[in-house]
Length: 137
Image (cartoon, rainbow, N blue to C red; front, side, top):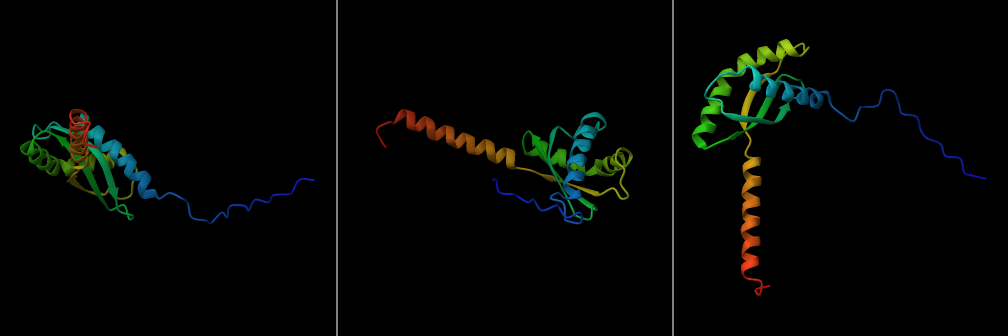
């Protein structure tokens, strides 16, 4: 005879494993990327990629992390252009998303892509050094 296994039912009032802020931040990330690609015509904004959106739990403030392709001058100009376009982007978000309150948008530079490229460059240099000097192990 097989043992009987009982599964406890999930309590209907148990907390979900996800937060609404996470879902909304993903949607905001997609919408801002689309707005930047299709609506913003500011020449200061260069090749910008939205990497992440950190949304507060009360959905009032959103930090939008962007990476910018180019030198330091292009990065500063792009962030300045994004800062001046933030009210327009916020109004576009209000038109596209059904929210009681559209969050205040703050743009921040995300250097993780650059750090990752730098680490890959260092690893390649070590690999090249190991290929040239195989006897130093």
